[in-house]
Image (cartoon, rainbow, N blue to C red; front, side, top):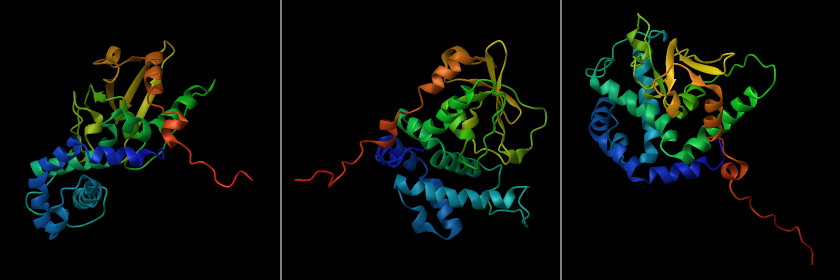
Length: 250
């Protein structure tokens, strides 16, 4: 990410949008404070505290019910089961404060997602390269692409296992939910200059590009050009360099 990202985040935290988002979660945070025995921690209304609060909370809740975690028992406190509205609210807010806050402004998007997207475009520009693999954990690299491109699922497999967080039915934005364990995002590029994104086995549409909305295929040139607009230049990324001192002699 860019060095200027923290400055842009601070601007967002002071914005009406961030404060409204915090205000809308007062009830759920009050309940979680009582449930966890940390009412003072969860009573904060500072947007800067939300990432830390939801990170620990969501990790704890999911590890109790996730089938890939070898812990027993799998039960959680009353009202916090995976099918409860509160769990879904916590999941949505955790995804926002840890991931999707970066997509709230064009500046944040460029400073947070842009460097990785620039690396991908460099990869795509190498003649003869037929395969590239990117690996990451939790907040990347999948979210940098699903959020930037507004990838939206167009199809669902016949079998959906509840705890892959699969609100990923047809018509739902992929970035709306936390990437499930073992998430795979594939970009296929065809000889007729068309591309297709597949997210965890589901074909998606690129809603960020008008001509690609609602379609399973997107023109390669249009995709490349749009992604290039997200990549910041060095000045945007690093800001004004500090002047050197002591370089002149009298």
